[in-house]
Image (cartoon, rainbow over the protein chains, first blue to last red):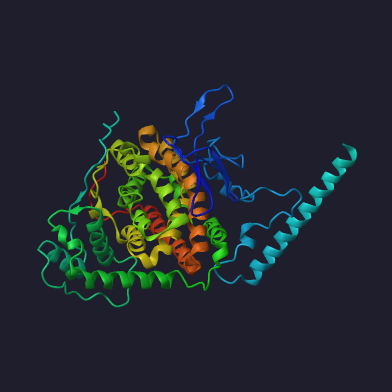
Length: 138
Length: 344
């Protein structure tokens, strides 16, 4: 039986199951977190021990402990929203340009941020053009 | 021959170390009697409270009264009113110094705390202790590193647990989710503090809680006193949350490097299991801490946003000072530990 929690989410009255049905959450610029009742298997059917109740699975593809996250996404500058991605949305500028800096940005930092944003805007246009081409020829 | 795996530690007792100056002289003399009169000692004016041996040891022992039995010290000292003025003076001086070195930044945007934390931890300015450990550190240097970390790791997660009753709602649930994993999901042999004790034993070091307190310099003690300060004051719960978020976010990659360093020197799983576990565990914890915990707290209590950012920056600052101390000593061919207690 599901019951609402104070934060509006619903939770299973899960009896002896750890946390109810499996729930996958995508975290901004980071991994998938899996919570609830789940198991992980290799493609031969073998069990991959989760090791803990809440597991982070690699989303950037660069972890050295796949399927598990090992933090490499931070080294490779992986970017992805903490929500469903909208197709053809403009690519976000990197965190260093978007996040409010702890100190007021210097002119140099602002210039770098603007240049990076311009580069990413250009990349988005190229991706759109490529997609349009594929649409015409495919 | 690998050391016998110790049974999970079920009690803690610390031996009172030698005093390091007039504050610890007076404090330890008082603590080894029953609480009577106020402890009269003048704290230094100016100086560097963060690196000061005398002040940091005094604070560390005072905080230990909350975590462990201190031999020869009546447990009533934990809340004895006679201790309060000295403790208050030490903590105020420490906090003032922290807020001075971690320069004020004005208002932090409550809606962007998660992103601000990501940005903060992404800068790698100084020389990397973990990279040095991975590629160059000697066996002796890695053992010293482990001894330094014993100041915190044998009580891993405890300072942050103090914040659980001081939070509510989504932030509280997120902190508990992290801590449940830190404490081995209820299994003593899998508690992270126990995994660290296992590493100590596997290296031929003493896994007993507090065994190396005498050897730890003030710059190391300060990193733990920071957590205790944040955890034990409700008004600093934002700082505690920011500290934990930054701590988890700067854990996976360095811990992989430390494990690699031990493997480079031929050590096996009995030594590296602690580090390997942290790579995976903290990869999950950092997302929970940055977003559910820190960002969640900032959204429900926007007034805490600046403290969350300050707590993260204070961690990074004190960690950098500690790492610089180790690297500087090793560059000079000197030990980074106090005294001459030989390591195996």
